[in-house]
Image 1 (cartoon, each protein chain N blue to C red):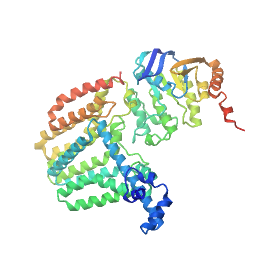
Image 2 (cartoon, helix red, strand yellow):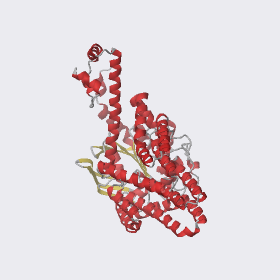
Image 3 (cartoon, rainbow over the protein chains, first blue to last red):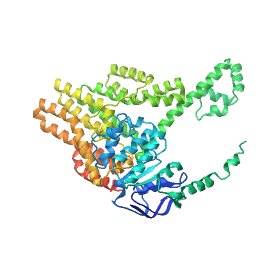
Length: 226
Length: 358
């Protein structure tokens, strides 16, 4: 479980997160939604201990950063490092020994090529493979479906179901509502630095309708399309 | 009239574009007053505008270079002064130490210049400037980069090598060097990937050169050249630790700052030794009476490797700045200082990493 109490984060005078309180339980998948700049990535960076913050974040085992698989929106890859070496590096970093990485290459990535030459989707799949092989109990997946082909999207959805079955805690952000409704147990709407709404699976359709109404309103009519 | 004179005198600050927008009028003026055809004038205008673009490119490069020095905490003038001293000092040392200095010198100069011929960079410049300006830019920047080497070769009265460097510099200006190949270069360091895997792929030819120099050193009975080859290996591996990595690559470790630093040092010592040891063994076999001196140089290589690692992380996530530079300069001047500098920078590194590693 990850418990967040009174989490606030400021960049200068800009208050990005305001007194966030939430608990992420084992065996559950959480969706975090919100517009651009709502604070999703900052929240993830705070949980991962990549940012200094006010408030408390507890987990078991502690510290969460050493047991967290973090998939960044745009994973960074060095020049002249192969896909296999990237996976090896992340496994070494967590003291995990993988006998044969090639056998675990479920996305059929060209692991012996330099990762920096991969397409956007391939990079994301490589980064995801690496954190999955780390065997973490917690996962934060920031936009895992972005830029990934439809076949891989199906596989990622199944992976998330499997992680839930294995009693892992998964936190996902996505701008594609259907990907969240397929995978999440709860969705939390982050707006202006705090959770303005939290919805259980049974009410996802209501949240989607509300978000549509809030986002679109009468904007399309304003275009005056004929 | 004055406005159009600007065109001919190629005034700076893009006055051409601002002042001569009515091209028909000024073309007519020039064709009657100066006896030139209208097409000549438009060509002149185009050339002048393109010259300004090239000039703006070099001004931008100059500003960007100065910015790097400022970021490192150095005034640009001081940085240029220090670099000049360093360059002249190292050049004199090289030419004093080995009779093969001119070859090593040419290799260094061409390696530096080849980096400017990288395909993607050339493509970008071609999109921005077109074919003719691209060649102008490439020739000028190659000449700028090779000029210190040429000046020192002239000082050494090695006129033939100056001509050779000038020729190769000009050829490199019109060819693109493919630095991103489709094939993956094999590396013996894949078990612990990162600095040595990517570093080896970038610099493996330096190690081949070092091994070749060792063989030459033994065959011509020049121990100094052999020691230089060994130190060249260490100097190359030092460069793997010159830049701070993306924070994710530090954060990902389930290690305390101290354990992380020890792990980095262990990997660096193990892998650098595996590259430098063949040279040391060959020299030890041929010069057993100098075993003590060779061991000392090996230890110094290790010590500098440790010092660069702790220097890097003592500034992390920023790049190494003037503080680390001063420490390293002091160590080069008087290596025994390393005994005090390494523990100090190690402690600093632990503090800097404590935010990312628990």
